[in-house]
Image: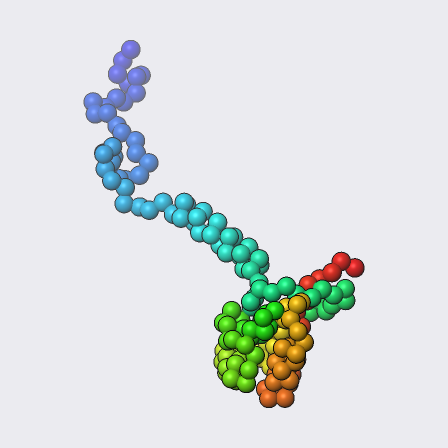
Length: 165
């Protein structure tokens, strides 16, 4: 066969590359960061935090009285005031002590501070009151009177444990 029928052959071998980069050495260090594992971990942490905020209750944990009939109104993220079975007063998780005039004034200051920087504007002027099932009414009454007369609270939401209908 003649040289024309075989086609043109070059004495130089041709290398085909997909990119214009030179081939990297096997031992070379990669400079780019693989973010896929980071994103996976962050998504798992986000899911865990979302579930924990649903499980966690607001305010001090007390045994609540049960009720069959209750409102299904959404939480307004108003400040939580709690009276436990010993008669101790709490605002959110902060223990103020036995219900006295001094602790009621401290409660007023903390509630007003929460209203000044509200989590939800609809919660301003509202209180979420949690009282233990075993607490005497004589320990809850001064709190209710103070909230109503001294602070002028527009709405007091009482916490209950849902009872099956």
